[in-house]
Amino acid sequence: MQLKKYLAAPFAALLLTGASLSNAAAPIDVTWNPSAVPGLSTAGAFTFDNVILNSYAAIDITGGGTAFSEQGFIDLAGFTNNNVFTQIPTAGYPGSATPYSLYISFTATGTQTPGIPSTGTFSTLNYSLLAAPGATTFSANASGIFAATGAVPFTLATGTLNGPGSVSLTGTPPDNLLPAANVLATFVPNAAFAGFFVNPNASQVLDLSAAFTNTGSVITQIPLGGTNFRLSLNGGGGNATFSVSNVPEPDTYGMLLAGLGLFAFIARRKSNRFTA
Image (tube, rainbow, N blue to C red; front, side, top):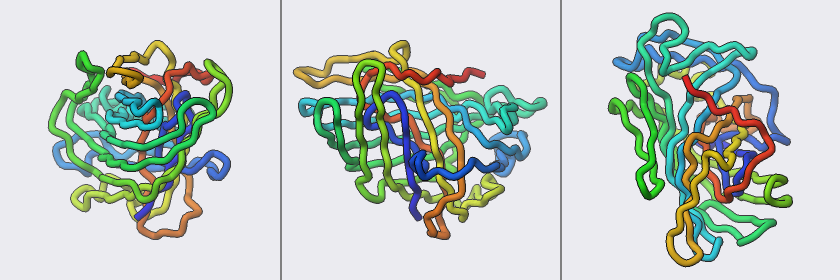
């Protein structure tokens, strides 16, 4: 299985599942069912065409700006359809469903050319789509590394890198930067929770297009010695949409991944950070 990933955001080596915007088709409606995961929530199936995301990540820049490593979480904070909320997991909305959390954990490494413009590739990528009863919070320690606090999660799907892809950063700093990433990754749904993916089901080929805004207010730069440093992203906002893929693999399902980045520049795009 393969999954195409793309991210346009205020960081250079950001990645997110989906096709590049130039190739993305019109967004489609997607239906998921939290109650299909035993013990997760009483929330019923819901349909959405947009996902509101919050990112919590640490990005280490090393080797004189030529290498990066990333780890963190993407919180799937809210879902809308035709600009109307259809699910806010941690609020138990709509109705009085028991709250739950949907989020992605990830790690990645790669290399790039220093400076701007910059180009590079991914060396590794691992991620898991997770669901947990109740609210899950994400907090950083003194070193800027994030941890998730909450109930033990169910693993809905996992994936790894399937080709180096590409990353780039062009433009003029500080506020006219054009970062992008395009990469393929596997997607392996957990057969025990196949009922979560209602329509399209987990065998449908989908792309995800997404954008993130990580302004200076959510970024902390931490020195790591020499020219090395860490960027800690505490709650950058974004959104994502699904579309039908042109890639003809029958066992592919475009799933959310997000929030990876390299350079602490303020984006011009308005933040979509969401708090329930």
